Image 1: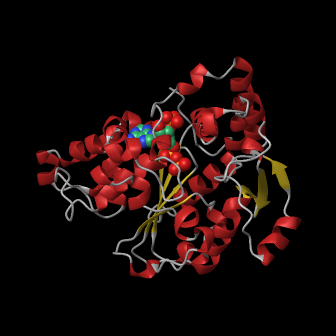
Image 2: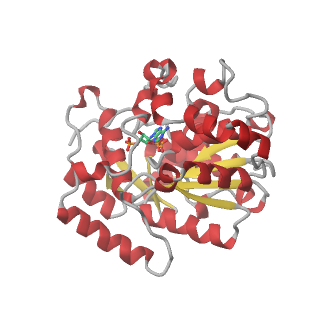
Length: 329
Ligand code: PAP
């Protein structure tokens, strides 16, 4: 394991209060040698802790907000693009040559609250963003700002089966290392994941809390799974449109708008765009790291029988009686 974590995971710019908090939080040596801190029951690297707190303290939800919540590596980039295309389809017709999704990365069009808008002491005036504001977060339900929970804002939740989520995260984290040197071994990272130590994890708590809330409040939270969107994209996109109260009209369906959105946001299309092949965030990370394979079942290339058994055992125990089932193929 590397001894000097990359900039992405660690940065020593916490306020004095932040440093005090850090000194009392439980910590674990996590991904790429950085420490993960257990804050309000979930694991977060130092780099994002202050931004999570700023988001909690400063964000004021508006009733028209649409907030995408995901477990990291569950297809966030994909759903950001689908949401943007869907909600803005009148302002930006799908086949227009300069559609924003053809020239900008989905993470720019649907920014993360803690990773972007409240990151590093930023003070953007997000109250003036065009309505409906499309925003994103990885923060667990119980730790969302109160105004999100009590407003009429809508939450779209996305998760993915834990095997593919883990493999995607393992590749992603290692891809942040220059020359992929000193990468984390899959065994070490898998053991941490099984202990619950993963970005915004434990994975099962994150998923289960949103699952239960989506049943309690079906008009507030829509629960989506990567595998279901892959297998039945039209049905899931229409579900999303209905939930957001912008259903497709018969004319739109007949003229192929649903397919046009799915084609524009497909892995093949997005990953081959110039902006996503060569563009970068202002912080230096390349957009291309968000496009790897985009498939269900890559776990088969990495998981041993023992790993499957170990994770199955945890997942079955945690999700018992919840009615929630993952698809692995
Ligand atoms: P984030 O949560 O850190 O923002 P996220 O977008 O969820 O990242 O992770 C990227 C994953 O989504 C990658 O999965 P993989 O490692 O298993 O390949 C990426 O390939 C996949 N992905 C990105 N865009 C699409 C898309 N348009 N369709 C399907 N999968 C996609």
